[in-house]
Length: 387
Image (cartoon, rainbow, N blue to C red; front, side, top):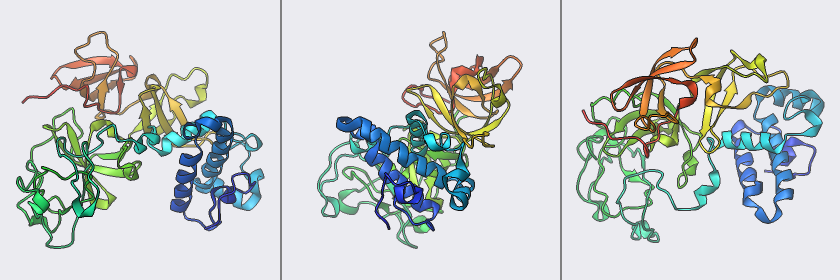
């Protein structure tokens, strides 16, 4: 693979990929370079890093888009004027940062280098204690379940991890399901056997509460710190574990099951843009949610149809999109504090009044403005549900 040349006028050379590179190679090259040159990673040389970061993102924005790439391959930069921030002027830093955040699910990917938060797994699992000859790592482990080969089963008690095969009804008897060997576990102590977590293993038949995403819901993983390799992966909800306030999510075509907090999942739902006074031509356009940045209070959405300049990724306030009926949300910024932080389901959409009717976690139904929800459930603020 060629060495990246950020100052090149050739987008392929900027990213250090061949002209025949697959989309996955382009994405991989962008990810590596964007993380390396982002200004937040280079505080001592922020101005130069910002310029390099914009060039890298401009190249990615063209080459990851099939139509723009085709025009670029045929006509060079002249074929994509108006796209990628307007041709010769390149992308602005704000646009580059929006693209960067959309790529990483709307969250700060640099937190992956720290260990100050628990992305996945079960609390209280202790340290690794040198499992497989590894160095002991205390606290806040993650757990990734990968399917084993046929007949490997649960194998509880391995290396002193005995007890509790099946993990709260999610797995079957040890050895059932033809898979379920726990692998890639950052923390092992006191975990208990976890038999039958693979395909075909028995799972709890208890349905999710109405305010939680039901089994089968399509989601996108984002914001993981210690397992950032799973960010931006599409997945499918397998169930809701109320005792842990986590979803069990299947990714990698069923080869990996993750235990994730609600705020690490986005629903890639289709929405409608409304109420944009500065650009009324956007109103009524369909789009799809990519992510939500709580720190800025903005969704990143991708329009179904590109704008005249070729751009299709935009930042939108919650007040400027209509979520569909059935979307699971969290209620925010109401005068009645009892509802703030409640997980809820949109049961009706009243476009004339610009209101949702939502069924909340506490069993109450309320009508609220579009800006009083976002399509992400925050388990840290949600209350426990009792049947």
